[in-house]
Each structure stands twice: as C-alpha cells, then as structure tokens.
Length: 403
Image 1 (tube, one colour):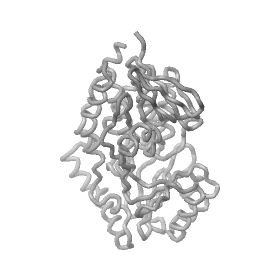
Image 2 (cartoon, helix red, strand yellow; image 1 turned 30 degrees about the vertical axis):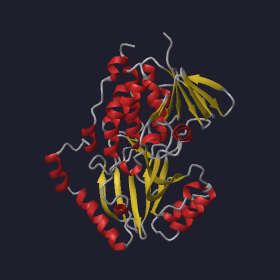
Image 3 (cartoon, one colour; image 1 turned 90 degrees about the vertical axis):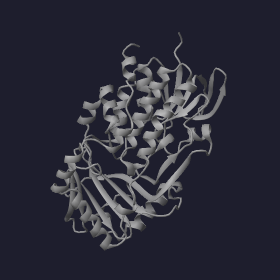
Image 4 (cartoon, one colour; image 1 turned 90 degrees about the horizontal axis):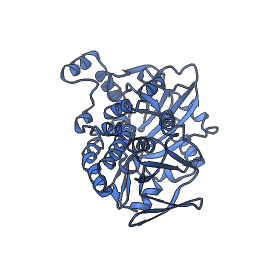
C-alpha cells in the first residue's frame, strides 16, 4: 500500500508537530520552509493545558523543561525600577507559566524529533497549487514541480500559502496594538525576573531573561491601524525610537541597541478568523488558520493541539474531506473559546495616564496577594486553565502504536 504524501508549509511549531504525528500514523510528510534554516529567534512561549499532554505523548516534555528560560515570574516596576507588584511563576495564568521556553528552542526540539523521518525543504516556498482528481500539483519557487495527496498550510499569520488556497476569505482582525520583539545584551540589572514597565500614553516596555545569556526585550503601544507591519526594518526602528524616546526607565538602553539588532520582529497584534479551514485537498492549521494572538497566551499550545487533532483525524478517515470536517468540528469550539479575550484587553494593560498606571499596578498587586491566591485555590485547581474544559484530546496515539 502506498503511503499518502502530505506537503506541509511552515517549519515552526504547528508544521513539525503535524509531521511528527503524521509520520507516526504512517503518512509520508514533507515540510517546505521559506527561510534557509530553522528560525531560532523569538520570545518566550507557553506550553500548557492540552498541549502539555501532547508534549508528554511526543516524549519531549523533559526537553522542554530542560530548555526553560529560568524566568521566576514578572515584576511590575515604575520608572525608578521600584517593584510595584509581582506575579511569581505559576501563581497566575497571566504571568510566567510552568513550561516557559523560547520559540526557537521549541522549534529546534521538534526538528530534532522529526528530521530523520520527515523530508525538510529549506529556502523554498510554494508558488502555485493545482488540484486534480488524484492529488495536488505543487510548483515551488525554485522551479521544481511535485505531486502530493494533500497540502497543509501551517505557517504564520500572514501566510502566502493560505492566500493561494483561500484568497482573501480569512480575516486578519487587528487588536489595536503594535508590538516589537528583539534580543539585547544582558546587563547587571537583568535578573531571572521579567520586568514590566508602563509608560504614559499607553506604552509598555518589557524585558525577560532567557537561557542563553542575553535578554529579550519588547515594546508595545496602542494604536489604530497604521500599516507599520509593511514598513522596512529601518523604518520600523525609527518609529520605535520616536514612540519610546521619552518613555523613561530602561527604554533608552533598549533603544540604543536597536541599530545593531538583526532579529527584530515588529507587527500588529491580530487574530485570524477563517470561516473554513479546508478546501478540497488543502487545509490549514496553526497561526495561519486560527491565530489567537499573543494576548491569549495560547498561540503555541493551540498550534500543537490543532496539529495533533488534524493528524489524528487524517489517520481515522480514508476520505480527506471527512477527516477535515471532523478536525474542524472538534477543534472549532476550542479555538472560539481561546479567541475570546477578556474584556478590556489589550487596553487595560496599556493605561494612558499615570493614574491609570497606578490603578493597573494596584490591581496586579491584589491578584498576586496571598489572600486572593488562597481563595482561588479553594474553588479551582490553579494548574487548570479555563480553556482546558472545552476539549478532550482523542486517543489517536493508541493507533500510532499499531502502525
């Protein structure tokens, strides 16, 4: 019996997770990635809830723990670096999670566990897709043409492959927040605690420790859509210098590192809303299909869950259309729940005035108080996320043992 050949676009989190499970279920998976190699940069991501269970099933949970950033929690500071409130690790769903890892480190772990069984094509991308009765004819940018049984889009929020399949049907919902992430040298003032600073006019400066001897920095600010994500890196750096020149605290130190920085990421925080996740022999998962935005704290976890379910349903159904329909029926309610951001987000965390900043820090202090934590434990398991109740992971993995 011939293996079904499945092409996956994107080698970050969703793509390799999908390939891992497809391989376990007896499919032949190929991953194409536009970058010349793994993209190992990026900021902290959380692996929690159902995704932690998937990591256990994949045998990578211990590796994720070993690559932990070492962050002890988040301190909310004023312009003089005085701590106004703090959330120790694991004490709140809005602070540092139990499994906190750099995005690039997780991508490396997933690659290491798939590279022997999965074909990786780096430095290339899909430029056209032509479906026929028996498969999908794929034209790659570098000239090669190949035929696959199915094609899965598993890349980013602004996926080019998604556009080839679905056109403009999926909507990118901007949340009126711009954010920039990048890496800067570590200084003596940086500890294992992340530090969050609110500047007036709805600006935030955030620095976090990593496990490689540097510091991860970010700027964020409220704004109506300006198209900043379409600008050149030099233009984006100029905007950050203008926006944060008078922010105070350690903003000047961070801005001074911008000119020599090569790993800057600048984008509008958004969600992807797609009425359908499949079309014919093509489907999508991860951020390309249902990005919940970093504000949810569930982006990487949702990517892993979606990939596991998609692979599992493909293993259960010989007809890809039935598999795609079952995948969407099971996952859609979970995605809808995660995309429901709390009221006031992101505005509550980006107060405009000094008085608003004081209220915000006071609220964080209350949340982190021993009394509030004690009351919360009486009514709920602190390790259980509200979104965990909305999905029960099917035991696809049992079938993988039989392959």
